[in-house]
Length: 260
Image 1 (tube, one colour):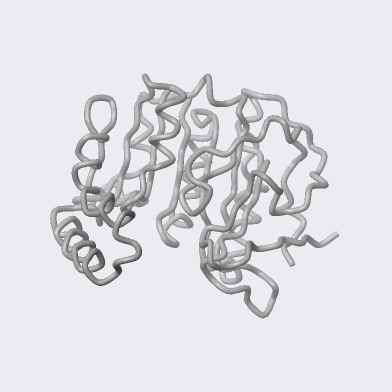
Image 2 (cartoon, one colour):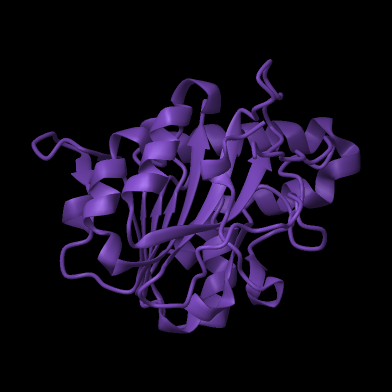
């Protein structure tokens, strides 16, 4: 059971849309923020940019800057060898594996022009090589959609996110190791006066723990100075049918309950 602080504020369901696939990599946001977003900043890329692809179809002139120090030449060599092996071993899935084999070409084609990937780690350290801070990324930026999935390092940059929250129209962030870090998440929600929580989804990749908490949560925040947000808590049941989908298809989606 989640603390009441993580229960989203009420938003008309007709304003909620899903961008990206109906599986891991897709996120729910308020469609009212889309038209005013100038830049997407993605912290944590791995091999999935389907969200960015979908969004760029809605706004072809969008600027996209992705940061992930793990996506480098070594990453693509290992990925190519793995996909080739799977192609020959998994005959029933050959069609889907063909697309993955050519993932590097898709990556090079997508990240060009106004879209760029930087092999840098997002951190709170301003003086370390091959690392970059949120403050530096956000310099001269405004009307940003910030997407964060950096495997527990999100907790190190929460203060920087709050410092730049006036520049953020929408924040999509995945929190990991929920039981261990629940107080940090609650404090982030409480301390952020501009970004308000409007949606929550449990990632079903990890099991529910003994406290009834999922291993990871995907949260959507919007800038309350840019769109109207009520202070009333939502009464929706999560996941929301028709808009939320399990990250891993072979497992049931996570049903979220909240304290009174």
